[in-house]
Image (spheres, rainbow, N blue to C red):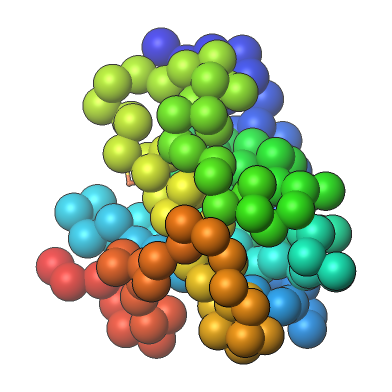
Length: 143
Ligand code: FES
């Protein structure tokens, strides 16, 4: 059902944790399954120098968080904003159709973190809009 890459990133996730003094933090949730993903970005001179995540969610959500953080590291923010859930899935050699929504969390969390960075640093990133799926981490998802 799952590719070797998905299983690898699920059983050995990269970049787990948080970044103290992160320049951008994005927290998004899927209200249907209740899963939550939080991504931390360190940004130096417009380039993502570090990325970490904490995900309370399914295996596919963990694997996509892991892959998404690997992909954005070293990227200029203008490129990081273009990362799509499709690109993350392709990098993982695919996900089963019922797990595609899990990869959307990764795309949304990266964008939410970039939005947070843009707001805090008064930087404009082309193509970036205010996230609609951002959640207050102190509020549990609706039942
Ligand atoms: Fe909720 Fe995967 S089932 S993110």
